[in-house]
Image (cartoon, rainbow, N blue to C red; front, side):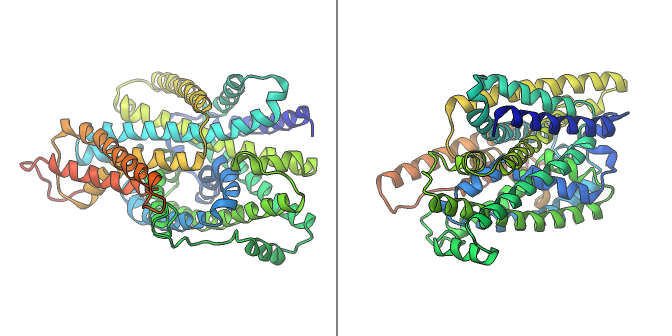
Length: 492
């Protein structure tokens, strides 16, 4: 399969995205950019959010990890489902009741401007790093398997892809992304189904026989019962629930799409349908992983150096060209939702939370100019961060993303917990200090425990539970700085 054919298909796909953007962004104003003018259809949001949640990490890291981690990822997915229910029935009613454009403005109403800015700041850092890690994973595959042979520098690849995403998000924002994510989710799932179907046929296995073979090779083990392990089922279920509440319920990118629905009932229907569908799609990705390793074994293909390279290696180098092309389209479809929604959400959060654009007495044209300037700046920051990930040559991207979430969303979760379930107020000037110190202390604890485990095989090793430790330390710190002379009677 030639590189020219691949690039032609990608170019056609991008032109389709531009056409969608042109149709959906005509006459779009700042309200439509930020929250789609609260007119998005819930079923489109639910379907499109699947692509945003999966991203290139799920597309490659989940299947690639099946050989060593088996189906243990399903433990985290169970936690995801629990977390989505909390988002649907605890956080969404709050956001709709307060009629929020930025979800972090709740912190200003509840605690004050410093807590508000602190929460928004942690979101900006976390979403930037997490999104760039996801984008880096996909871009690196395109670079290694296609563009390196052409002598194209990675920096040029990154700049061109980010420019492409900028072009179709620049005007329409959320209003456009709801529709482009729908298209991208379709191609991502299509690539998944076609690959499993073709490998199953090549191996001469029916769906039932394929599952039996995956099970016979030991890949289908779901629950890890070793409590010393970072993959212990209770740790991963709780971590999955935490990650969902943090990275969906307290994430402007994900909630921006939810609060663009016409009503709370529509937003909750969106979350229910989305969460059930997401569980099923993740199960399919795990089945794909088992199928890929069966294919490697049956055809005596050497294992790629990195698990993340298993899917692209087989799809591009060993399967027929039409399967490879569908994989590339699915891969690009996994890339774009990781970037377009994040860019839009970061632009929205910075404009509303940091600059206070919705409170400024400026004309619509002036606000639009500021918003577009911020959007361009976000793209430049993405470029720098992606090049940084390339420079450090990070290993498991999915582990990196979950760890970033554990450190950066911990203070945000603590602020919301105290806001929703207590009557405390803080000494506002000390809030940023507590929220910065908590992740630092958490890192020191993790480093100490895991250093001991490295020297003592079988000893307890910390995994994603760092998120709960981070939240706990932040909660303790915030309670210690409460302003006991200023308490509220009815927290929002």
